[in-house]
Length: 136
Image (cartoon, rainbow, N blue to C red; front, top):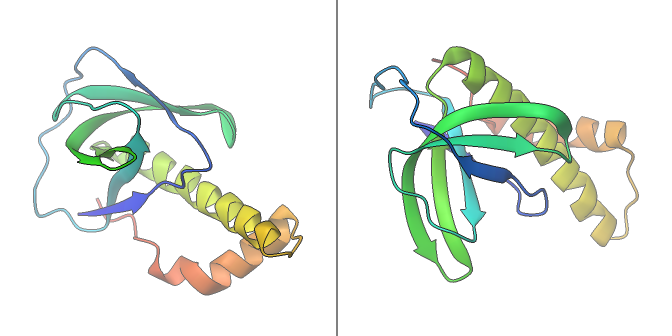
């Protein structure tokens, strides 16, 4: 099971929702299954959450399940899995867009001005091969 750390400079909106009847999860799943994110508040393991990411896609909205939540110095790092194929695939695509936007912003702080397409081309060349595959 692989989780991708969502960039802190692209805030997620995470909302508790009524627990969803997700399919049972095989602990031996391989590849991309979800994300980690630092939240200001803790979330209980097993709870269902709704995630939106207005900055990348105002229409993005998926449901997931909290796998774990660990307190850190600056908040709570939570892992959220997406047990259905459709949501997992959607989140993986949005997460790649988020990683590219984060890369573009980081380049800007280093004095490099990249448009989104230039940042995408560089990110793909440097990081796409190591980004967890979708293998549900």
